[in-house]
Image (cartoon, rainbow, N blue to C red; front, side):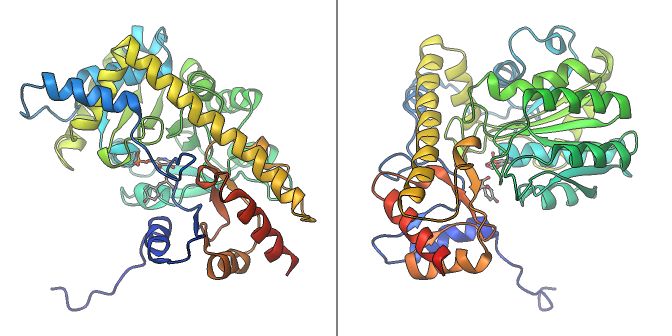
Length: 399
Ligand code: PLP
Ligand code: TYF
């Protein structure tokens, strides 16, 4: 049965973690996998999470099964965190929602759900997009096409080319995958006016938006980062959302996320929910409980919500400071190339815009790790390694 199998390549991002761990250089710097790090280079458990865990430990009475939709309280709070408390989608009961194992689980369940609705659908993804989007969507049998997104020259969004492609090459019923905020891997986000235009185009062309939001609160703020998602939910009749609590609650390994289907009516939302839950049953039956219990405990308690919000704000501000500091330090190191675009971008990632060979030199000669595309995790920088990174990059760019 297994003799004919050939080894497959490892996840290029997760594999960087392994390489980094094996490196014995005391100056090594990890700018690879997208996890938040503090000034000491640690990925801490948020204080609000620890407090919530104490409450859960003291009050939990059962570990009995829960069901494919997961915890109702978690779903209630997460839908409000994303859509806002007053959204008409909620009062009109046009939402079907399920707690999922992380944003990946949400993406895959949304894809499987779509494949059951219509197998001939095309999902349009940005060029580039998060590498995992491709296997998660293709694994459900969906066809993928790409729309232009990141502009290597301006370091922003090629918005005219994106709109041109989406208006001319798509057909009604096609799905457009959009990063809700903090685009992974480029850090280049749509402006509010651009979100408005995308929403109008979706209505005009009958396209269904599918928003992947994994960094809410790490760009401009919790509400600010949901602008595009809320605008779409205000505008279009149907929409999909995959959300993740991995980054903004620091719950990575607890696998906590949610999938949402916004339907045209309450009746269709109910039927969509039944299809979604049946899809989940066919994959993993029901999600793990602990991460969602933490999020529910935080968001249902005013004091803990405040504590979490304060901590998340500190994380966001630290990333922004690092963005400025990196651009400034590279300039101070005498680099001819400008990196002034870095503070303009959002969230954890930016492309340095250097070649694969230069990325390899930084890794092999300086023990600085980043994804081959030159994507860096800004949160991996701190005051002890910033100078070293800026100087090493400048050396490599000098040739
Ligand atoms: N979507 C994007 C764009 C991501 O970067 C990530 C990774 O963190 C996810 C979704 C889902 O992550 P997780 O499954 O860890 O919640
Ligand atoms: O892009 C990143 O680094 C994060 C973390 O299979 C991640 O989104 C990377 C790879 C993966 C799952 C999560």
